[in-house]
Length: 305
Image (cartoon, rainbow, N blue to C red; front, side, top):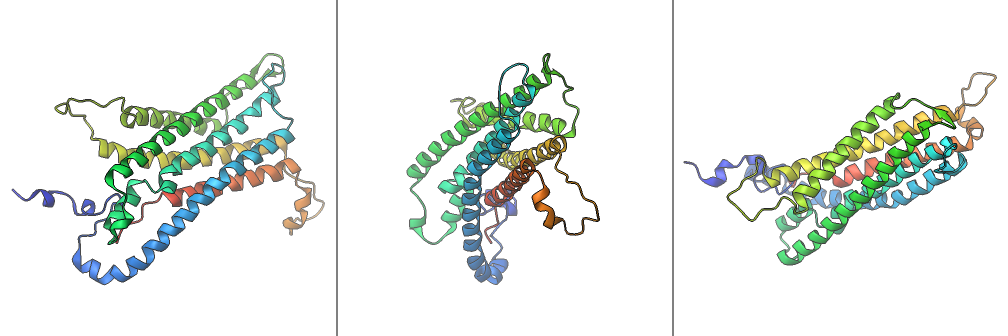
């Protein structure tokens, strides 16, 4: 029977959380100089990217609030369906901004398992926190992460209620629900988010912990954690795309076009003709796009070569 270490696939050996092995001696000898110079740059770039994304979160909330105000403000009163609906983008973007911060708390605090594996592979012993301190800090970050995602879930749920309330207003008039592609994608993404949230709380919140070690789950916690990380990043991207679809749909109702009497060959010269509300929503969409890109890069797990 081969040794236990040999039974582990090569791409899992000595790679921490990266998904790439580093036990190929010939490869290490040829690439050690390039990896030592490129990895710090990637880590620094990821830190900057994460911080930029976090700073963009409140900017997104400000922009969507200004946009909703320009569209008439918000209300929860029957007969004011348009203003009731305006709660939807405000709460959804707020939920996304909160979620965005929650997705990055481990990275910005240096407590992600990816960062820990990199620190342990370095030659400097001072770069690694003591095991006890690291566990305490990571445990605190888990509480923050779960609390933030819980708040985001509440905001997103109320945002969905606002849509159905505004569309089923007997005074303002009834409007069909779930007729657009944006709404279909939104329901799918909210369902995935709910599943991710529930599984995360049950699996990593201690609710499924058992003192009986003889009882084995059908799926190990490390595997579940990897799926949780993948799904979280995937859902974050889907949420950003869904919000941009929603902005595009709303702009169709607002009307962002302008009248031209000849070929519009230099459209940037007519920027001033675009309605103010559309300028705000365009800016909001770009901020959402930037948040998605920065966070995706910040959460990437580059191989330790």
